[in-house]
Image (cartoon, rainbow, N blue to C red; front, side, top):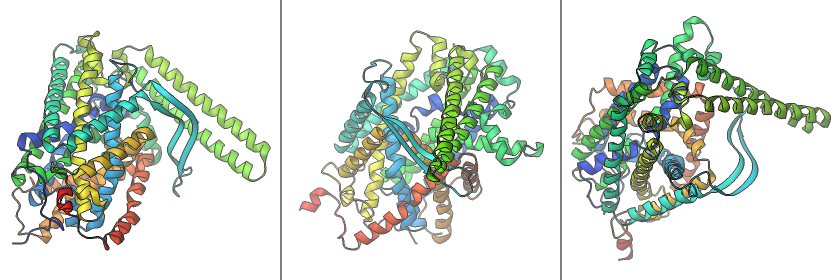
Length: 593
């Protein structure tokens, strides 16, 4: 019987202390962060109606569960530290596995840690304003722009821009959270799992309470009538629909295609909110009876979270209309379209000004620059008018689409208790994000451990301390996450890599097909549900979303793809460096013995 090679160093010093409940809590705890409480607002703005909003979440739920059950087969075959990195390495070669690990370290894992830690600080500001993210300690005026010229676009994409660089008290709180949880996890997996279990149970109960209140005490019959009267109408008025229609064409025959493309693009938000379930595979080396526990925890964890997410969105729609007041929705979308068009014109005028200056025509350059500034100011004025209009509107008129600061969950709780609603949701999100950061810190370091064992990462990350955890990997991960906290760029970086995350999901599930063909007799304690149809549909759906994102959101996709491919020369550097290195010992203790 042939079995996949798990690692160049198959024996490890990990302590198997995670049972089924612990593994399930790690999945649930990292999936539920702050996304479910806010991301439905952005989706509703894009799709413009209740039917498409629920369709996006249902599709996300089905895809997540199918993906998790496909990963369960691979996890049962290869229950080793590193998880998805190992799956990609064994199905293809070390290069795809490294590119996944490279992107995780550079952005996916560390960027998520930074972003969620900052969200924790933001909601702490509801109770203690001084440590909040709005309390600026130092600020500098800058003019940072990073353009990305693409041959098929008329103007370069601005993939990074920053007008000010600030250090806030909230950033220091986020750093403190990252340091505390990194140190805690250096003490052992038992300490990390207890924090995770307590936080996950608490936040799950808080989300369940939100659902119950939304479906009982906060129910608004007027909102239900609005959401059920015309559940599939309204997307054609959204700014996203208008932008996609410009690229596809406005013929009647293409309307449904445009709608599907908009819905597929909107799924990036819901998929990000439901992401990180795959992190449990990183910690496979510390799970008791992993060949059984991993597949079962993936099914239980993802299934329970998706049920909670669908019920949460039903609760939102039982309290608020998806797009709020129709006239307000249409007016806001029209204003956003106008502002975006003006900014495109301002950017073109600014480039013309630079060309005139380069060609020795200062008069034309100054004129073009002045026009650019005037057009940009007009766009800013439209934004200010839009914000003023929203502030004058009631919570019901704003609906899900324009909930204050996108806090849909808070809007629901405020309906029950205007006095304590904000505080309740702030506390719930703080607990949720704290547990989410802990889970990502715990599991992420195990990925770098596997890479280091293959001599594709810093040697120290492949060592275990006396407590049986990769302490150096935890420290390196924490330090880079802290850098991203202060860079203020984690939000843009996460937007960039969501495309890459989905692409790696495709490659991993395709890898399951490859291993079925290459190793038909390998031990498979669990076989993917509905193989080959359901995993095949998952691959097709994810691949379609990737293609749509390249068209609909080029500003968020091409940079992420380029960022991932930039890891290719880094891979060959590590390969060259590893030729002259001895194999990494299991632990620092063993190294010194």
